[in-house]
Structure formats: C-alpha cells, structure tokens
Amino acid sequence: MELRSRRHMAPDVSGAIELCYTNGWTDGLPVVPPTPDRVEAMLAASGLAPDRQLAFIENRQISVTAEKVAINAVMAGCKAEYMPVVAAAVEALADPLYGYHGPATSTGGSAVFMVVNGPIARELDINCGDNLFGPGWRANATIGRAVRLVMRNVIGTLPGELDRSSLGHGGKYTYCIAENEAESPWPPFHTTRGFRADQNAVTIFAALAPHQISNQLSATAEGILETMCALMRMSVGTARQPQYATVFAGEHSATIKKSGWTREQVQQYMFDNSQASVAEHKRAHISAGDVTAQDERTLVPLVKEPSDFLVMSAGGRAGVQSCYIPGWGGKNGSQSVSREIRRP
Image (cartoon, rainbow, N blue to C red; front, side):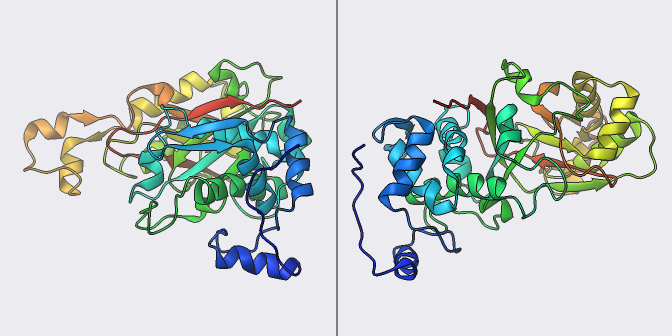
C-alpha cells in the first residue's frame, strides 16, 4: 500500500501534536499523529486504495482521496473500523443535492449533522440514547470530528477564511448520532431513503444547532407535536429552510408509539401546524412591508413538503424532551443526502 502524502518528521508524540497545531491542522483540540501504520490500518479496514477518489468538491476543484480521509480519521481519534462510516459521509458531501459550497461557507453557521443507521451503529457503539448530542462516546465524537477535519485540512474550509460563519455552534466539532431503531415508533429512518433495514447507511444534513422542546403534560402524540410546532413556527422565520430534522426522545417516542401515529402522519401534522402567517413574519421584521389584512390570512409553510421533516427517534429513555434541528437556509438550500456504508 503506497501512501503519497508528504511526510513530516517530529522528535516525539508531543512534538508531532505541536507540529499539527503550528500548521493549522487541528480544530483546536489535540490530534493523534497520523503515522503511516495508523493510516494504512484505516485504509485496510475500509478496503479502499489510497488513491481512490471519495469526493470531488466542484467549487473548490479539490479531489478528496481515501488516503487524505484516512489521515484525518486517524487525527480525529477514530478506530480503524470507523473508517467506512467516515468515507460514506465524505462521499455524501460531494452530492449536488447537498451543495457543499453554500452551507460550508455561509455566514449562517451550519454543521454537518450525521445520522447512522443499520447494524453497524450498534456494532460500533454509536450513541443513540442518553446525552445524545453530548460527550462520552468515542464513535460519535471521532466520526463527526473526522468529517470536520477533512473539510478543514483537505477542502480548505477554514474559519474566518472559506468558513464565514457569524456564530457557528458546537456541532462544528462533531455532530454524529445513531437512531434508536430498537425502540422507535417507526421503521428505521434510512428505509425512507430506499435502504433495507439490515443495510448500513449514513445521512448527512447541513444543520443548525438542536432546539430542545419540553412537554410533560401531554399523553398523546398530538399534544407533543403541537408543542413542537408552536416552537418551530418562528424558530428561524426565513421560510427558506429546505428541511428540518425532528428527534423524538424516549418518553415522547413511547407516547407517539402508543398513539399509533405513523411517520407520515407526524410529518403531515407538523407541516399543517408549523405554518406562520405573513403578518407574523412582518411584525418580527423577518419579511418587509406593512401588515395587511390579507397577510393575517396568508400562511407560510416551514418547508415545501411534509416529507421535508426528517422524523427519527433517539435520546434518553427518561425525560420529556425532544428537539428540532433547522436545516441551512441559504438561497438555494441544501438537501439531506444518504449513502450506503460499505465494508470489505
């Protein structure tokens, strides 16, 4: 296996870590030195040749090879067996539907939200439960971090340069979860994308931070969804978010399951009940112009279609919290993209 990347020499591990800082190759946290043996192990676990192109970023005219991805996966702290997930996510970045340049460079501050489905999520112990978006799980932390390091070190998406986020959010370090397929009220999310339940897949989504909602009063799906819709109505307000992810945690998922609501019923309810009036937008200075009587009656949908709500189940079993995650709302938007995770 011939590696072609430029070699750098360091006196010891500490020196190698400091070299990465000096050259701007870190996200601010220490990285694992990508020695040839570690990079080769990463490639072997994925069955990918070093020169295999995983993505071509059109606006940057940059080819992202498996070797470069493996280097950054090592730096992120990934185990070798995580590499197929990272590789699939990087493939998805180049999909025209995702539209890499917009969400990666916008002042809007989105991050790459990743959802892993299939048996591999359980095999790799990707967290789908307690502290879902928080620290504590190596797989979640390092898989998401690897994708961000690829964006930084290979594609050149550097804060303050190509990445012009005004605020950003913590998901820019890592934003990776698994779906709780075992306890979900619905079939696994990736089956909505044409995959079988026993296939492995990753879905990426240009996303803002999670917005937590709480409802401890409702014993029905409708009550929980009304809370979700009420808070979503003016959550971003531009009416340009192409998609929203909604993540229902344990107690809310159990209530929805008991109510017997399908994923499609949830999507339709949220589509119908998350619309805000033009008048509300104007009063909030989201839209321009004076408020008219017609504005009071004219509703603006949050997304174009009910299916633009990405409905999934994950999070702790205890507690009455769930969340919605707005997508990046640039001029042309960005669609979520799913890819099969392939292993040798």
